Amino acid sequence: MDPNQQQQQQQQQRPPPPPPLPQTIHNADIKLPPGWKIAQQPGMQRPYYYNENTGETTWIVPPFPPPMPIMKEQQQEKPKSKKKIKKPIPGTDWLVVQTPDGLEFYFHKPTKKSVWEIPEELKEPIEKMKQEALEKEQKEKEQRLEEQRKEQERLKEELEKEKLEREQQQQNLKRKAEEEQVDEDNLKRVKHDDDKEEEGEGEPEATEMTEEDLLFQLEGMDPTELEAMGLLPPPQEEQEQVPEQPLIQQQQQQQQQPSESQMAEEERVELFTQMLSEKEISPFSTWERELPKLINDERYNLIQPLSKRKNLFDNFCRILVQEHKAKKPISKPPEEEYMKLLKQEVNSKMYWEDFRRKVKNDSRFKAIRDNKTREILFKDYIKKLRKEKDSSNSYSSQRDKQRAYMDLLRNTKEIHIGMRWRDAKIILEKDDRYHAIESKHLREDLYRDYLDDLDRKKR
Image 1: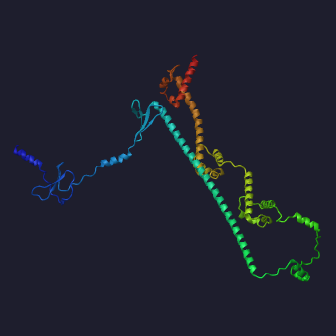
Image 2: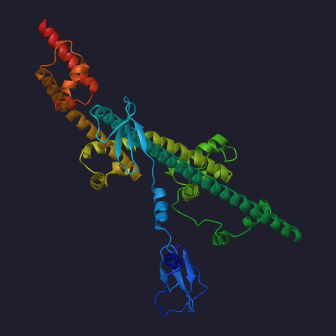
C-alpha cells in the first residue's frame, strides 16, 4: 500500500479534532446518550465528546433525546377506535354500514359493491326501515310512560293504604290507652274504698240511728224549730192542695215505670242509641270530642262499662258514615273530568305551560294531584288531535296523489294491455308522480286497475 494512502486511512480512523474550548466545566461522571463517546487528544488534559454516527463533537455533555411523541398519539387514538356497524336492509341483499366517523355507505353482498349514495331500489325499503324504527321507538316510549304511570298509581295506593293503617293503629292505641286509664281509675277507687274500710275497722263502732228513731225525735220537736231547720216548709195560704191518689193507682204507676235494674239490655241499648241520634253526633268525630254532649244525659249511665259505650258509639258512627256515602252522589273519576277539561280548552297548537296557566284554578285540573300525570294526559291528547288532523289532511292529499298517478298512467303511451308491472315500473319511476305514492303495493294495484279499465274500454 502506498504510504500516502496509508497515512490518509489512519487520519480517517482518528476522531476529528475537538471544537474550541468552551467556558463550561466538564463532569466526567455524567452518563452519555447512545452513540456518544469520550475522546481526548494527546497533550490535552480535558476530554471532549464525539458522536460516532454523526461525527459531531462538543465540549458540552450531550443530552438524552426526548421520548417519541408518536406512542402517545397511538395510545390516545386506541380508545377512540370504533367498529363498523352493519345493518341488513329487509327484503334486499344490501347492508347499511356505519363507519367509526358516523358516515354511512351501502354494501351489496353478492357483488361486493359499495356506494355512498342511496340506490334507487333501496329508497323505499330504507324509508320503511326508518319508519319501523320510529314506530318501535315510539312504542317503547309509550310503554315506558305506561309503566311509569302504573308505578305511580301503585305507589299512591301503597301510601294511602299505609296512611289508613297508621290512622287505624293510632286510633286503636288511643282507645286502648283510654280503657287502661279507666281500669286504673276504677282500681284506685276500689283500693281507696278498701283503705277507708280498714281505717273504720280500727275505730269503735258508732251507734246507728234507725229511721224510726229519727221520726220519734222529729215528732217531739216544735214546728217552729222544724221550720227554722228547713225541715218543714213555710205555710202557704193560697197554695192548692193536690188530692192524694188512691193506693191502687200509685201501685199501677209504679208497675208502669220500671226501674233501671228491671230494664232489659235491649231497651238500654235502644235508649242509648236514641240519645246519640238526638245529640247530633258527627260520624267523623271521636268519642272524646263528643263526650261533653252525652255525659249529662240520664241515658248515658244505662250502659256499663265504658268500653261498651265506646263500641256502641263506634257502631253508630259507622252506620252514619254508610248512610252518608249512600246519599252522596257517585262522583266521576278525576281522569274522566280532566279529559272533559282538555276537550273544552285544548287545541292542537297549544303547549303544556299555556294550558297549565290557563286552567290552574279549575277543580278538574286540581283533582289529579300528580303534575306528571297531568302533563302525560295532556300530551297524549295533543298527539291524538294532531293525528286526527293529519289523517284528515292526508286523506285529501292522498286522493290528489292518486289522481296525479292515474294521469301519469294515461299519459304514458308505452303502457299497453298485458304489459308486466316490472317492465312498466322502469318507465314510470322516472316521474315524481310515481314516487308520490309511498306504498309500492298501492302503485301496483292502481296500475292493474288502469289495465282493467283499458281492457273494458277496448271490448
